[in-house]
Image 1 (tube, rainbow, N blue to C red):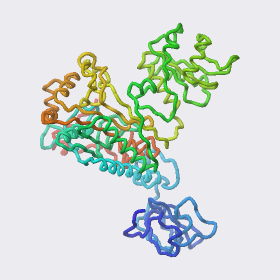
Image 2: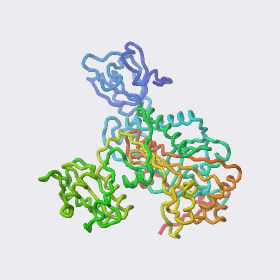
Image 3: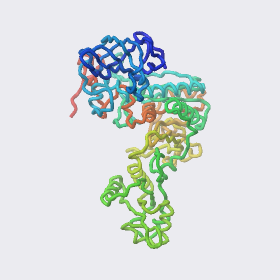
Image 4: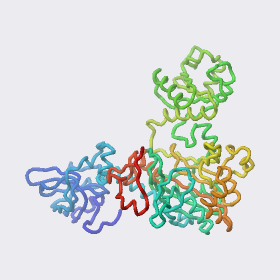
Length: 580
């Protein structure tokens, strides 16, 4: 327990039976007022540790959420009036005087209890929302996450270094926020998407183990797990392999789980990107439930059933325990089509004359042998539902993987933690409109040495030395072994369509640094907002950010963003044009 000081002698949670007979001074907010007759009131005072009941003279000016100081004597509550749900439930403060430090107007919503409040109202009055138990717990959990990160990184010999917030444009895949320069009219800084290039330069500079709790900014669409500005653990190390980097981060995660959950995490599993896609249809699989995708191509795709005539057939045991109605099954078929599949086949397992059999519009096309093989392949029992998609491999796995999530995620226990390393991502994720490969992570990622020869002949098959950390279906962060040789970096720029002049203009300082004994190095970054949300049992990162933006990028508290005076724009040489 932290030591009280200033106007208070104790925090509320410290006021227990051990203090009976002692004088105490408490500070906090009025949680409730219950008048008892004409002259007496019971007032609950609240701070972030808990509440204490105060017996005092009635004061009609005392409203809930007023800031007060209460001074009185700790006494046991009358027999039969204990409250076992709070730390101070055996005692109360008697003979108490109350000093009104900050009177409160009527609040727009109730602070105490578990009343549901619209998010727009909560964000408009965020300073009141932050008083609620949920937000107090979430932000203090986030503080524990930060402290655990620093503890683990310092223990492993990492040095904390701050990198610039005013930076140069970089090709890292997201739109950047521009900052006009007053001293250099017509030129711009950007707010960093990440400290990627800066930390690589730190490796060249001999800081062989760097970390930072870094603020990053991206001008991209907002979702439940994204904000314009976010915080990440950013780290880099020299003379390491990707196994070393993953070990560093695993130790951080172990420390975070220990600090926030009081639990011991025993290692983190690992699969390749291809295995993740092939078994779960997504590169950030949620392992809180089963139902992996099973390859049925040989069993169903080679026969005479037109519905399964495709290069790939994937099936799953539907991750749901409730029987689905025909209308719900029809809705799943439409869902599959909306995701790009030609259709979705469903099969119920029912009890037949000779044992388990299948009920489906397609069941008549399966003989007894293939029916038995189908049931065995998916591990089905009577009462189960099976789903199958026939298409190209990419479409089949992505569509069935999404339906797996649609059915399996509702009602999951958010207290469960299933971490997973996903490795061996493709170096490129497709082609741009000019036919150039697009970097899957960023263009500073080292290719797999075995695939160097494919850069000229088949770049989309090149694997990268990159790795993601996944938790409960969320990508917490990404990392890679970096390119440290100028010739390899120049080759990657060439492949993605950045010519030598453009490379020199945009990254000359980095390429030049590689000429001076750049060490092999690699790193990682994970989102602290996302991790803190998961540790708090939340699904939306806005619940662990003190002052977040809405999904449309607005701040209801300050009404930002706002227009600025033309005189301010003139200083940086800007003119605002109306959008058409």
